[in-house]
Image 1 (spheres, one colour):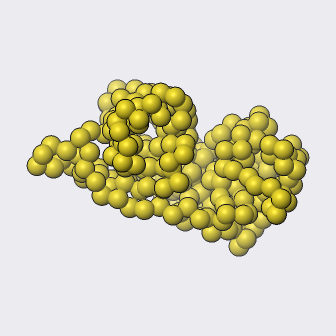
Image 2 (image 1 turned 120 degrees about the vertical axis):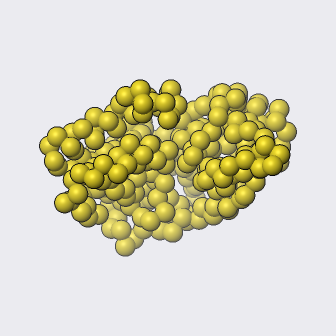
Length: 259
């Protein structure tokens, strides 16, 4: 595995080991293997590992075309997955929207509070009033039975069909910029036009998440398809790394979600 490890980060080795076991299982049994929900960076790693093996391929689906978190099916060439093969369900949070409000963080916290791991949940969507989320279909009934409140708000979880999927209000902006490095604090400072010191403070004070996990290393080097969430500011995704400029700065295509 050393030849695979060298292309990715040390902290990604546990995921690489898991991905290799999925690939091996699909190859040895010559049957499809369905993963949990993967973030964009994990999808990228898995796609690179499957590569052009020929005998197997990988397909991703997250419930709708623009989904960030997706399940993967690693399968033999003969197998063409359908949407139902990805075994996910769409749930709507029914709540008194005229008198209360919900947030992405409160919904996610409540879902994790049911004892289910994050990898069993996909995207959480909102159009500004309604809230929906994707999850593995085999845990839907259990989660619905466990969640009656989100924060102090009484709620009811209901199944929805994909024709009921709301259109999220998230409005990503594509930004082409140059940065002196791909350090986490440097990128945050450049995108949101704040000082490097302020960006560093945001990271070290626990207000930043990398790929949906708490992260407090301002000197961390970002990579392709990483997603950074900054409380109070928005989100950044590394969409493409386009090389170095004549002044030795990185040319990067960012997706930016402004708060």
